[in-house]
Length: 114
Length: 107
Image 1 (cartoon, one colour):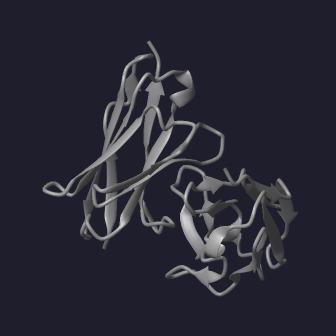
Image 2 (cartoon, rainbow over the protein chains, first blue to last red; image 1 turned 180 degrees about the vertical axis):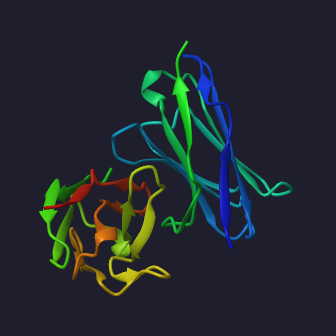
């Protein structure tokens, strides 16, 4: 049973860096693409980016200058860093498996506020 | 960037009825890399369809996807009470994007 669990601070101050981790169980992190997707309250889904095997990353062009994704194979974790956050970055952040996303975490709410 | 447009924005139907949801892309979707997701309040999205027409594991055959190029359709042949939700299409090519969603509500 593949399970994904997002974790990280629920509150981030404006201009700081949002850092989240997705821990994967029941699967090898080296086998698939892994994506981050976010959803502001009451709004639609926004793809943030994806990473494969630490050697290939694709980022949403609108976020590319602020996003960094990485993989820690020893911990079976994927991380997301989003710099210079504003209130517009307040959302539920999901990690998900695959080129198309067949397994999702439950999501974690990140609020950007001072 | 490929922009996806979904119509209608809201679909009001009764259980047992057929639902037809449309997803149109601003340019051709490579290799039919088109997926459909269902999302219920407070839950993560669930993959229904990938490759435009392939059902994901565990998805009932009341759900079907079709289309190619720029025009895609998700059909729910007979709505069950648990099918009332928001549906998103996604193209997952080189720079994935999601459509704005279609809400299927109980009439």
